Length: 144
Image (tube, rainbow, N blue to C red; front, side, top):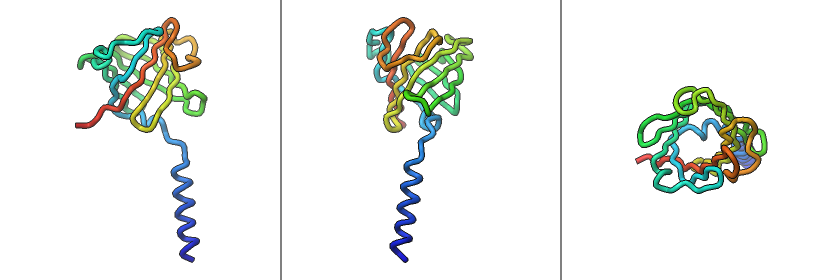
């Protein structure tokens, strides 16, 4: 009887832990740029430190040196390989623009997105090479 109870708990734990994560929930939080590549060229680390990304629900806000420069919404397509993100700028530098991207999460604290700023087609790979292509790896901002 005890063995079957332990087995049931183990099977329930296995079922719960094998459920796919809701990437939108993992996206929630404050992110810092770790590495960025724009059209194949690496962005200087000093510039990366000036950029912050906040994601709440399905909304994002980008700040540069503490000043909000871009706000909008995003939709995730988690079931595709690679997973896709569609961004719609609402206010700021990207207002009225649609940006298409692919993303990958590594744990809860590392997010890599390859953006196509032209918004005509999703990137095919994570390299940031080509016109309008940007590759950014974000790290979750540490709470102090």
